[in-house]
Length: 231
Image (tube, rainbow, N blue to C red; front, side, top):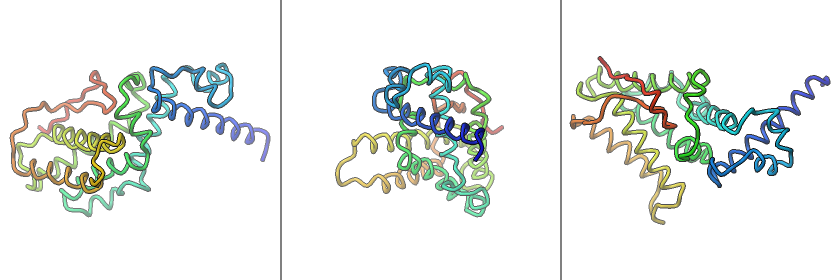
């Protein structure tokens, strides 16, 4: 290994240490309560050294959020596009939202930071970096629309609202589970299955939905709302 390669490896190891320490601190103490100095102390570096990798605490969060979204869409863990296509339309939706629940179990710190922590910055500041996350939402809309086109969901279903309801329900259940709010005898996996099945059954029933058709970024970027209702 040459000097340049060794330098890059060492630099990546330090960057990884910064992100891991920051993730743990952000989740345990809250984003607003963690300073660059505190992160530096955790890994026994100077604050100046941290700034050599990340210009600000916000930039550390953006890097962690990007990692989290990529883990959520990890093709090694999530159903591949070909696998999803082979499933019946509603089973396709079950698989997608089951993956969101699995993500909360496999990566609880990323989940908490992305979906629960209230003081994190808006990702609209890093609009281009998260283009792939917006693309994931577009694919979700397409999956809902395919259910409507196949006649398994009524034409009155608003795809964006359906996605929002399913996402909020899984996030709520996962938050209850991760914060030990479930009863000792409750099985979060079974609850997750029930939540998905009940919501899909409700959508199948044609129940009227009062919500608007806007999809908001899961990190709370109201200013990045995108109207994706099927025309």
